[in-house]
Image 1 (tube, rainbow, N blue to C red):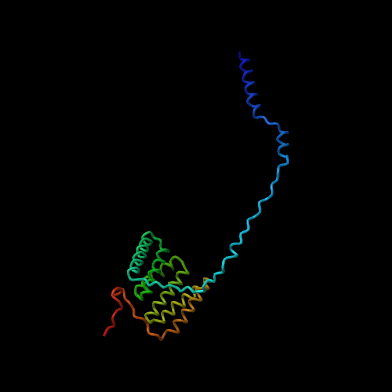
Image 2: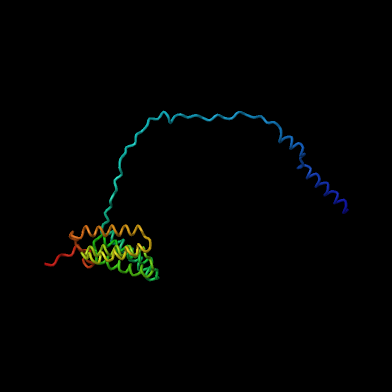
Length: 213
């Protein structure tokens, strides 16, 4: 019985594999058989673009749009930067806080609020010196010179610019040296011009501080 079952299984396996068997000689003959080659399809030529008329574009100059920032937008920007600076100081991210202070100072400079701009520049300058951020130190010194020139104190403004130029030259900051020399020449040319009306922190929202009579 055992041999009978073995014989049946062998016959079934032989019949199953025989249906998948393919003569290799016939396969090679089919591969090298000459097939019918049809001609290539010619490319379609479309000359419709040549029939279009040429359009001459106007050579207009794009004017630069200047968007005035309203006081409410400045208030929102100031509040956002102050909140970010407080966060960075709380978690001792002093380098980022230094840049936040200088950003606030630039905002106050644009509004001619020199007292607030000077205070934030001094804070930023102190941190940048502690962090050995020489490029930011140079930028803060240039900002302080601008504030002091706005007060009319050209002597201290030139001292800050001289310190900034020495630091920039020692660190190889050639672009900053060029900007500092340009600012020095600007101060020398505008030393005799009357300074703008200064806005103080306590009267920043009310307008320029009235002169004492």
